[in-house]
Length: 402
Image 1 (spheres, one colour):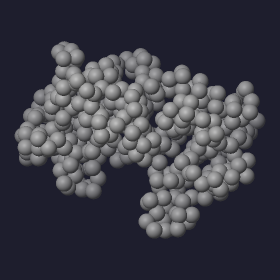
Image 2: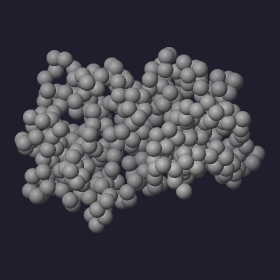
Image 3: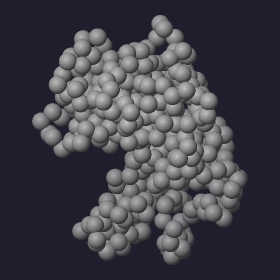
């Protein structure tokens, strides 16, 4: 590893991937924020291919393949590592979910905290691809009840940043290991199920850091969320991605000077499963509903900047969506809206499986205004970027079974 590559005089912290690129971005930002709180060096895992996005057998993508890590370190004035700095694995290779380990690398046992395991009725830690990919066999000890964000609300599983930080100090760690819940240690590795390996002290690790907040559940939806405000907003894209997005925007708009535009993100395909038997077209928001929000964003920008300003007179609309119905895209064009046709532009063939999503998130982030889909973290983070990076306006479109 692992351990041989860590410096004795420092303490570290890590967590595993969860569910898709945007959720993992939120998780990794939470991880960096907790590292700062607890005076530890974060080790960021790679983005793992998810079946709901690019498929399970896609390439593994490192954080620094997307985000400008040198800049982030400099702005935060804090060291940040990736697992590739610490341990050999199949980075930047096609991931085979049936054979993820790197040959010739010995498996290591690591004790971690189970942040979600503690509040799972079946005592299960988050199912994740990262440990296997890193040749790690993990034994989880559930975090104690006192780290729960809302202790009197059983259905919610959020834990608090301050509670997790307390586990990383000697007194909090001793209390946690003495708690009755500590006896519920477990592992997804069969031969380790009955063995206790206490959470590592030098390299603290957690099964999941997505459901973590300082005050409110799903705090990323609130403007006061500290993880976004102190860390996430400073995670800018690498120049290569920005340049590629610019070349795409020039082709879409047919001009060298990219006009100001309102980005619209319409998430539909996987959300249809949440309609619970309702007619999909009645459950999913219509294009006209997005059109109403576009008008509201245009008015918000006029009010903010004045109707004679460039921001106050934006007319171009650029849509991204996971919808694959040709009629949907014809209807988008009939509204006079534009979109990036990744299939026609050969995005996957020329750049790889991740790039349709990567280019969409960069293009969304560069908009003067944004309209998203409620309950989509991709829309949530895009709106944050448009607000913080460009002083833009945003709205979300609600959907669901009537």
